Amino acid sequence: AQRVTQPEKLLSVFKGAPVELKCNYSYSGSPELFWYVQYSRQRLQLLLRHISRESIKGFTADLNKGETSFHLKKPFAQEEDSAMYYCALNSGGSNYKLTFGKGTLLTVNP
Amino acid sequence: NAGVTQTPKFRVLKTGQSMTLLCAQDMNHEYMYWYRQDPGMGLRLIHYSVGEGTTAKGEVPDGYNVSRLKKQNFLLGLESAAPSQTSVYFCASSYPLGQGNTGELFFGEGSRLTVL
Image 1 (cartoon, chains in turn cyan, yellow):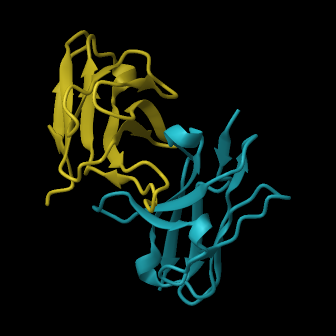
Image 2 (tube, chains in turn blue, cyan):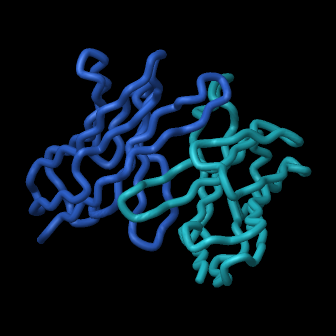
Image 3 (cartoon, chains in turn red, purple):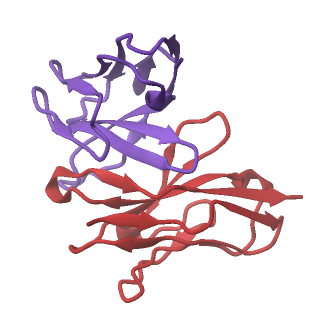
């Protein structure tokens, strides 16, 4: 069965420190993985997708099929990065439906 | 272009009452979804639709019904509300993945439902 695990409910770092939000997945097929972010009082929105191998707002995420992981990283955290982050897996194949992890609340302290 | 709009934004119900949440999107998206968000549980898929006139069950469909009579609207119904259905409900829509589409989900602002 498909599953997305985000082991940390809360993560607190200081401004300028590196940050890594962990995500592990379980899926029998070829995974399509995403990171979504929800800033305070804003809608949930896409941050990045593994297939595009892009860097958004300084964040990157590499798919590691051997470790079934898709960790989100940023070398220097900013206060505006404080938000709830969700890792998501397309578990529907061609029907395309996302299974979300439970989320990690990131707080970047000044 | 309003994107995804949910109504109502807040609602308080008594146990056993019924209600319908409306989701409307103006992006001509094929796919629409209803999720619920609970503390410590993340987002869980209730029902989804891959096109007008079609619906399918998600991860937590019990106690909910949906309809997609028009492409732009996706209704979520609670026939007999229970306290366990107290949650924040999010609607989302997307194009199918592929054919140049990213499959990005566009979310509404959420509807906070309290069942007493």
